[in-house]
Image 1 (cartoon, rainbow, N blue to C red):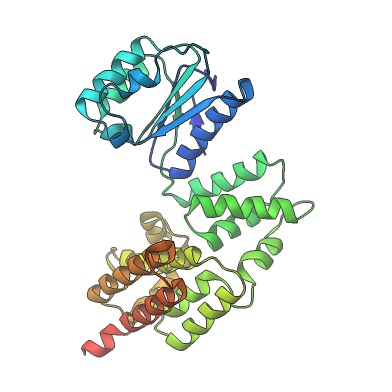
Image 2 (cartoon, helix red, strand yellow):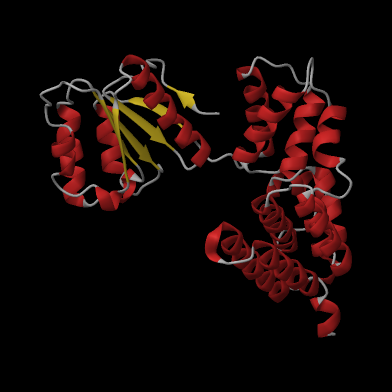
Length: 330
């Protein structure tokens, strides 16, 4: 969940959102825009990437208006701004305009650190949006999502949801919203199981499991059933990517107990045991081939191809073949 500074005035002259978690960055923007439009329904919102913010553009956008309109100017990937544009932004930070809120989205890190430091020195309201790489962070995120919706969920339910959905925060947030809307009373592990792990082979993770195990026919059957029952293609490509990456991570990890590997790789211990079973037929070349197949399928389902279903079928077949690459090489 995004962490904010103590001075959390959404209409502060400058908001600095720092991190690489896209959902949290988008939420930081949405909160500012919502507050601005609550104050003035006609608020003008300008959402810009570095290519659109040329030297002089910020001065033009923030110049006084005859109608004194409220405006929100969003600058994404601020770490990638040109040197001349950074000078413009730093100058603006010293004398921000009234009725205008500047929102800077910055990845953090060394690149563009001068702008980051300048915004902080100017007293910008700051929202931390760190990438959630640890299972414990994602679990805390799910709990906070339920609390924000005023709903109660058991610890076991929250863990089951993280295990079923994976690391994508947008999917986790969507799942929490769906459960909160559909289920009355406390949400428990049985409810999560019915929604996300008990859908008669319709889970995107079932497709991925069968594919990385080299079980082509079963993987294709699960894929067709998933699509027929409304599972979004993008969720299937996400599950395929997670499955293949897990194989690659564990193959390159040092040996050890599941609990130790779980901490090192950011997986629950039960998944370490499962992936160990799945990786028996894999080679490094097979992992590389499978990752390329997932990337092509992801492009295909996001508009890069004419037939998302064919793109998924092709990826599933390629991954299943890669899972048996060790046997073929011998």
